Length: 68
Image (tube, rainbow, N blue to C red; front, side, top):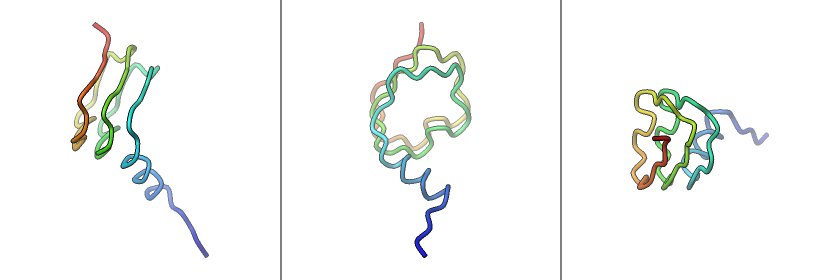
């Protein structure tokens, strides 16, 4: 039987996500993008709060757009 588990799926998505456009959330929680090693940019025009380690180990992240 070939089974995929939630943790494996999330780890795969986190490793492969490249960019996020027009994120509508107002808060980015703790560890949300932790270990998203391929993430290069995020556009989050509505975010007013960012949790601890939200972008920890995002070694490719070069651009973040937040509200003024």
